[in-house]
Image 1 (tube, rainbow, N blue to C red):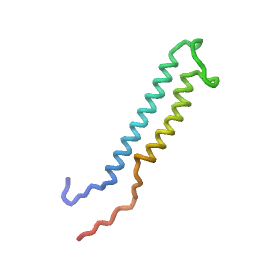
Image 2: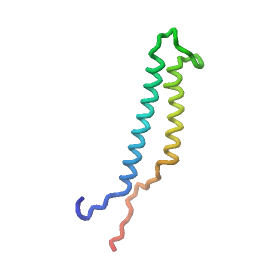
Image 3: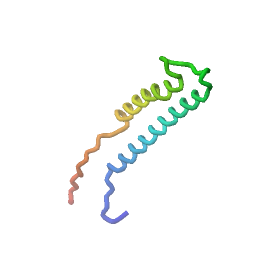
Amino acid sequence: MRRGFVKDKRFKIAHREALIGVVLVVINFVWWYGFAYGLGSKKVEDYSYIFGLPAWFFYSCIAGFIVMIILVSLTVKFLFKDVPFEEEERNAE
């Protein structure tokens, strides 16, 4: 570290929240891929349907979307912090 350089604590918070965002994206992709290719790899004649949609599509796209809305909402409410954009004035005492 350079002399006289004080690392801003907001960067630590921003890095943590960015990592949480990446984890949410990975969860979304794994959910989507698992249901889309797990249930969607059968023959079309063997598909089961939910509300007129193939089960793989319903679970991967519709249910996955709802689950991600809930996860992101809970994450923002409980894990993210409100950080001011203005620099803190430091006393030179």
